[in-house]
Length: 271
Ligand SMILES: [Zn+2]
Ligand SMILES: [Zn+2]
Image (cartoon, rainbow, N blue to C red; front, top):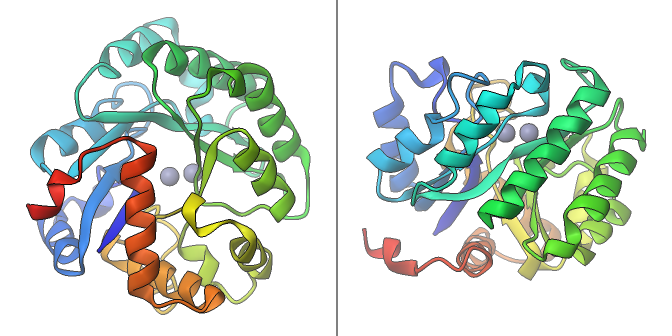
């Protein structure tokens, strides 16, 4: 059994075969998928909820991605506050900082990030963090992101998830100390991603999630294709190789972590 803790299934990449993609995930043993609700930004902020309300085995998030931070207006924050009350919403995200693409000015990204931490705190939801520095060896976004979390979030005790983790063990440890889970995606299988594999060897298995970030970052051996939730098995396989465990063991443990972290009933298992 597996949980794909992070997938974007709302987009046009899945327009023609979304049903089959979801059916393949179920056949592959994926029992739960978190439908990330960023969409294309304001105007599409309920996209994760729509999926989670259609499929019983899905949960949803809401939030404005750092890419679209410059589009965020007061009305969008009010909408998010309302959407966050819907029963299938389990987290606020993905939110954070992306200094690689810089689609929004960094100062705006930071403001929108802090604002959403306040809203998530009021909604009592953990946060899903996207953090990408200007290059893999830069500290810029990590310093700002972990610093803002420390300043504006950690004391709330709600924790969160560092999604699609690409940092070092030092970054992971700082987040673990603030109650975060570390989620590994398909890029842990990429030949050049030794830094991610080194971190994965050190993160306690009990604090780990796995995800696809579909449709992005398809793992080896599907690299370059559209990613889909069934491929979460490849992340589990790679993490298992690093830890000397089977793919199934990693799936089982990360699934238990997921239910425990979100205090969710495991009733969906029988669906
Ligand atoms: Zn992301
Ligand atoms: Zn994502």
